[in-house]
Image 1 (tube, rainbow, N blue to C red):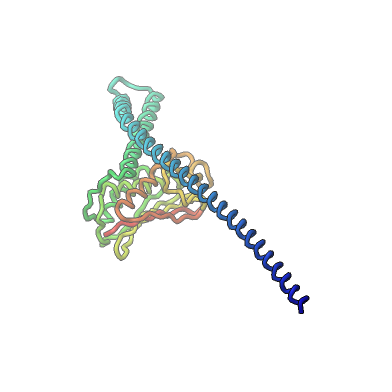
Image 2: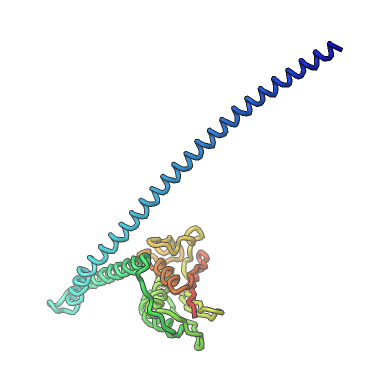
Length: 294
C-alpha cells in the first residue's frame, strides 16, 4: 500500500513538473509571438508612412507637371500664331513670289504650325478637364446634325487619305442634352483617329442609336485594330499604340497623333455623364462607342 502511494506521489510530481515546463514554454512562445506581432505592426506602420510620403510627393509632382504644361502651352500660343500668320502671308505672295520648292517648304511650315497649335489646344483642354475647370454649355441637340457637321468637315481629309467616310445616322433620334462644341470635338477626335489608322481603300462609318436613357454614337473603321494588351490603356493620355506607324494593314505614311485625342474623348464623355468604350479585332478594325444622356 505504501509503495502504491509513493508511486502515485512520484507520478503526481512528474506531471506537475511537466505541466510547469509546458507553461514556461507556452509563455516563451507567447512572448515570441507578441514580439513578432509588435515588430510586424511597427513595420506596417513604417511602410504606410513611407507610402503616404511617396503618394504626397507624386501628387505634388503631378501638380507641378500640370502647372508646367499649362504655362508652356500658354507661352507657345503667341509664337505659333505669329509663325502661322507669316507662313500664310508668304504662301499668299505678300512678300513676293515663291519658287515651287519654296512654296512647298512654306506649306510644310504652315502644316507643322497648325499641328503644334492643335497640340497646344489639346493640352490646355486636358489641363482644364483634369483640374475640374471645364464647364459645359448644355442644350438639346439632334444627333444627326452633330454627326453631319463633323463628317462634312473631315470629308476632304478622308478623300486625301483614300478612305470612304460615311454616316448611318437616321432622322428621328431623341435629342441629347450636351455641349455641341465638345461633342463635335469628341467625334472629330474619334473620326480623325480612325482615318489615321485605316489604309487606303478602307472605310470609316459613323452611326448612332437610341438607348432607354441615352444615345450611343459609334465610329467604326476597317483599319489595323488594337492589340489586346493595348486596349486597357487606349484612353490614357500620351499613349500611342503600335499599328498605324508601319504596322500590318496600317497607314504609316500619315502624320502620327499626339496621344491626347482619346484621353480628351474619355474626359469629355464622362463630363457629360456618359462612357466611352472600345471593341477591336486586330487586322479587322475598331469600334469606338460613347453614350450621351438624353
